[in-house]
Length: 304
Image (tube, rainbow, N blue to C red; front, top):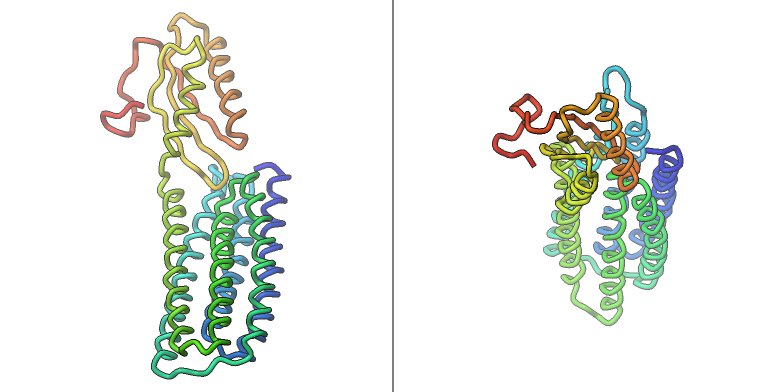
């Protein structure tokens, strides 16, 4: 990741912590005034957000460290570890919210100061939208999984806060007390759904899942566009933090000099880096017509 891209990820991380701190203070005040479990659900969500945002920022700092003797592939996967923990924390917050909402179902508490809650939720929506725009811009430039995971659940805050406004508005006109905890339960399951998506994406990176077919097709097109490449096989791809790791074998004229063969690999590397700016590319060259089984052919019967 370039230094400028690093800065974008850091700025997004610091912006998240700053904005969520404001949200926690205002929602705490609103909950104290109104005693609404819907506002409590939004407050708990923001507290969870603050924890995961701090974790995300720490993971971005760690993941940006250059490769060293002990970690020769770099530290990029720390972002996936952080995102996995984020998913677990969000799920835990949702579980707490369900228990609190069920308690309110059987022991209802009248909601007061509806307008205070509504004003705070409107502020929360505005701040969340600003933050999500900052984060999505950073993700588009860096591909940071930690920032993306943060962006996903801050984006969900917009929907949660809008729903909270609706519940508080209904309360002004005498809506039943059970509607408030019922919405909180809905929010809890929505949080679990968000956490599920983050967890799966984190596991994909940790387990070295192949890049999507569209990405593989782009790489294959680059390889096949080079008329000096007489064949190719064993394309393997994965994401290591924000770095794409791409390896494959090509077949070249067996009578070609080592220097010329190296130049082919160099051309392919530059062409792929034009598409994937932050890529690590490993190319093995085989003499055409002499491909044999070797330790690189990891998937039995699959050489594409």
